Image 1 (cartoon, rainbow, N blue to C red):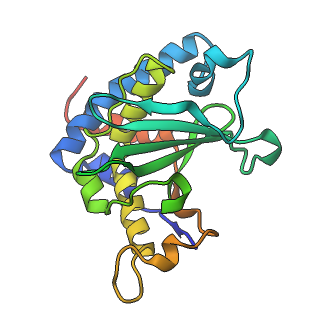
Image 2 (image 1 turned 90 degrees about the vertical axis):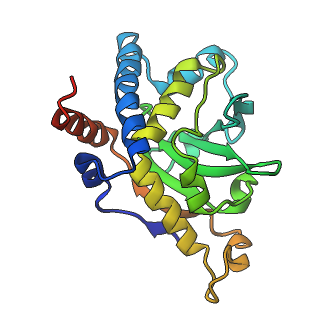
Length: 235
């Protein structure tokens, strides 16, 4: 029911085999990503403890959006929320997911870009796309979303955490080859036997949550970008 995406995504980063805008955004995001992780590590924190730092006493509702009204950037229109799983239901040692969105073009609503599965230690471990009904999005074709990424996804909000917003913004820029592969694979799954898109058979199937997914090792991604930067002679 879902398409597993593997292969040459790291090779594309190492070779710089990407549009110029992706390369520029990725190189800029590399320094910010490393700086954020150093700052968190210096305090013995991670992305998830930072996200929930003001909610340690009251806790938070499993399966509820966090923040409740989503973190919405007033300038870019991009937004995210986090979905924590009840620990009794953790699968694959998964704490929960971030869901990332762009505003719909020319109409109200939003379109899902990608979800990020997080480990209990606060590390991204998997990227995936979801069926339309999962988030209530307005499905947008891969090409339309890719035309607007990564610069269209920017979260610059003090709450619930400025660092987490910057971290997500940088992550999207660093994993654009993976995002492209996942969105194109999602569109293949959503294409009906007659060639129509999206296929109502797939969209209406409540048993199909995830349409495409790939494992994610950010250490490998950062190493690939660092290697590419070194080839360019950047410090």
